[in-house]
Image (cartoon, rainbow, N blue to C red; front, side, top):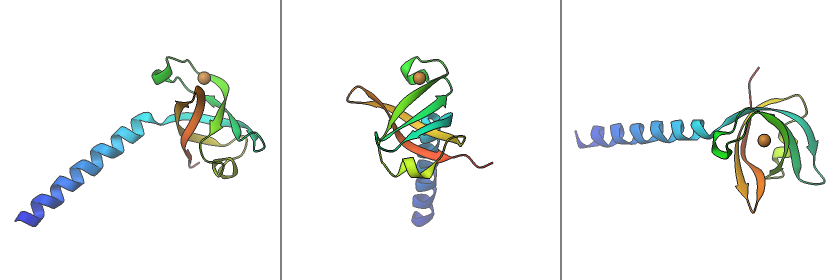
Length: 97
Ligand SMILES: [Cu+2]
């Protein structure tokens, strides 16, 4: 009995964490990769977090490996944040076609 209660509790917390993470992900399309600068250009949808409309702009990649994961033309979901005044991609996933 006790064990099943714990299982239910952990399923609930995993589900709510996942929806929080999803809410922060934004749709975009990679238009340019600049590995030397550690940056990528993304045509992104509206970013409510920054009160920003859809546009194409340059983001720093939080992890240089991200620049190898995607190429221009790829549709992505990403989590943008501002780190030391620079717009940065914190998380990145390629959208399945
Ligand atoms: Cu923007």
